[in-house]
Image (cartoon, rainbow, N blue to C red; front, side, top):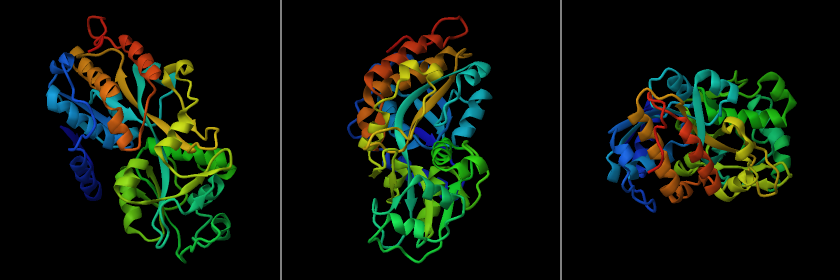
Length: 364
């Protein structure tokens, strides 16, 4: 069973719904013969809310035959990095990859699990999902607090024929350290010199405008209950909460809607084999079909494991997910990693070692 730890009342309700939806692991193969995981009855992780719906689905399916319980606290990428560095969890999870030099300093190793997209979502009466079009510069000006009305000429120019409501814009952003925010602000910094200079790109920034929600679910809740609101969430949170997502103009000038195919198009040219420390960003990739705010999500573990059984259980779980979790990922609009990337990551796992200096996991 996956236990999602969430801090606020709104987030807790969203987390309960998340688990309820993940008790139906349709399409995922059952875990079979995972002896290495059986050595540890439970593992703990903390971090990104971006992949939490998928980790919940994977964990429920895996537990049914392996008996392993995954206790995952969806507290945001920043919290996940802090907890794995403090050795209070067996693995951390982050949508903001750590740079190779920072991994070396902390004695950590990171690997990707899946890819997905960060999408702007709005609460505008009469506007349907995918109907509103935004560009990077306009989105940046909204989040800078410079565009304050949905009928502003900059928005109207992108949306001829759309009946824009006469509402003020309420900006919603993350209040916690967030890899989703890192992807979002990295995109804005690349599209707006003013954003790059005033705010920058990070998992935690000084937001010029708006209100903060904790986690993807907190942002989704604020947008859902606030007329005129705009926020940004991982796509699964948009679909699960029936939020109105926007089109976004990509690097080639095309307006695209967020779909698994658009995320896959952005990831098509990813060169993981030449990415030291698996540090790779997929923001604003070329291609007319590419979604511009695409990213991978990562797992962080210590290279030197104090408890070999725990380290073995963590890698065994994600090895099972690599083998059996792609259909569940696709059903939630994540993009599975190519088989060659999974094989590359598996070859790296030999560098995660126990107290005896031997690899903790050599395959199922």
